[in-house]
Amino acid sequence: MRTETSSVAALSPPENLRHGLRLALAPWIVFSLGLLGYLQLAFIGSVFAALFALGLKPVPVSYGISLLTKSAAILLLSWGLSIWLLPYPVVFLIVVCVGVLLAYRLQIKTGDMLLSVFAVIAALLVPYLVRTGPELAGQIAFWLIANVSVAMIVSWLVFLLLPDATLVEATSDKEVADDTSYDVERRMFRLVVIVIPFVFCAFVFDFITPFVLVFVAIQSSQFVADTSVQGRATQDMLIANAIGGIGAIMIYELMVAVPFLPFILVVSLAAMIWFSHRFINGDVRMVSAITAFLILLGGTLMPFSDDAQTKMVFRLWQLGIAFAYLSFAFAIVDRFVPEK
Image (cartoon, rainbow, N blue to C red):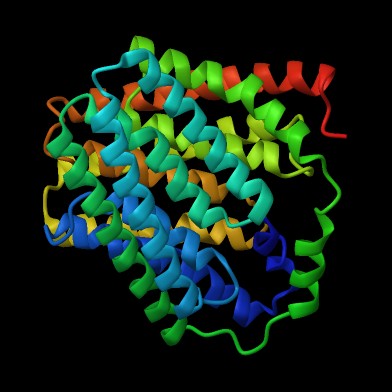
């Protein structure tokens, strides 16, 4: 995901504009389907739509089908295994931690960011929700697959409507090949030291919401799996999530002031265009800001939230605490166990 963002500067102005429009429209269309009541958990699908639209080329059809098949199998396996191990809390927690590590190892070994995201969700979100109720976890697993399917179709649609005339293939190939000299076991050790204590405390003390937990785990995998991500990374993430969170609060306040669906759709589209405009002008933090915006605003609009504004501020506070921990943990690990 990071390799393609760095190619934005190589695009001509018209292609840059189309890239930005794709990044704005794809998640907005999926998000709008949720607002219209056609798609549950649409804010998760909108995050995946943003990931699909972030690249300079559409997701290949063969890869998309393979991704959905593997993801469904991983989610089903996680759901069944979680139900089976639920009566044994110690073993349950150990298996969760092992699953998270396997998800990260999948990303480091294969470089398949999208599949590893699903692996992290299967390792964290499904077991977390199984403790609340197996049926709820099963329903969410189903809607996750449905959301990603819709997100993929929408991303293909926006690429069809807004194609790039030419692409700088050589630049992308070089960037993908740059990050090949690393010690896999060293990276895995860094992940164990940084992420597993956070996951352990989250499951034992229930101090964080499940979607925020998955969001932090996915972001932390980017930090460790990319040698270009060093000291400023977590600071940039804190800023990006603050921007996304403030944007979500502002849009929510507008929704409360003017509870008119067409107005809500237009305002949310304007927000996505603003994020995308900043992104194509070189602010790569906007990708994380879009993710935070969609998760915070979309999660707040879900029906189980009693006090939507308080929930949103609480989630933003949780993200801040989580990234403060990651910033401290990465500083310590970089000091004693550097990447190379």
